[in-house]
Image (cartoon, rainbow, N blue to C red; front, side, top):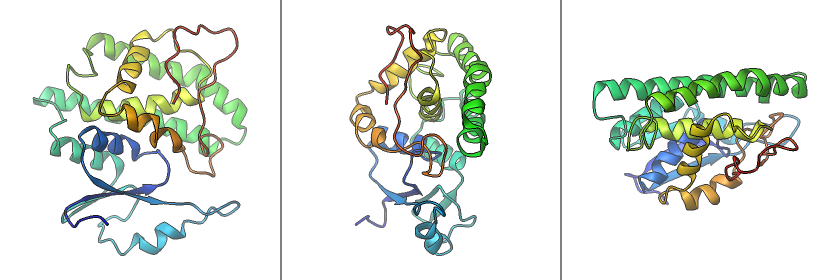
Length: 244
């Protein structure tokens, strides 16, 4: 049973938009109640587990994900992540760094929203996913590669992790799972993702609970079950990071 002082992070039983905050909490070794809600089965995918609690939690804007931190109750994934970033001093050491962190959070959210459109809304999934991987994703990856070349040190902003790292890694990994490319054109991104996976504070979690949770809800056309990255034939193996 969670204590009254323990953080509660509520979300669907998927990685989705809450996993960056979960990663941050695991990295900081913060005890929290990982409140998981399950979808019903096809064809309705009912949300009764969530709906029966939705209006009884005292949230000003009831939604998933939500965070209960004492008497502070928040919804909205970005708000939760930046609140935790401030709480654990992971929002940079000056105003410039904080602004870059917020920029990275918004930019990676744009990428994840585009992936969402593919995974949940595409009518012809094969055609839409191919266009995303061939045309849309490379534009985003080039931007992040350039950012790492320009600003990055050990991590996105410097030698210390920030709140942005948890989201950028997670959302890039979602795209990695869909992509059939080896991303050899983005060596900085590959090195960054490999280093993140090897973090001592997160390695065990990433290889266990994290790896067993789907990135999307079960109604999605992709990622509704646990998937691994599959490369197209005849691609270079030496550039491939460990699949999650």
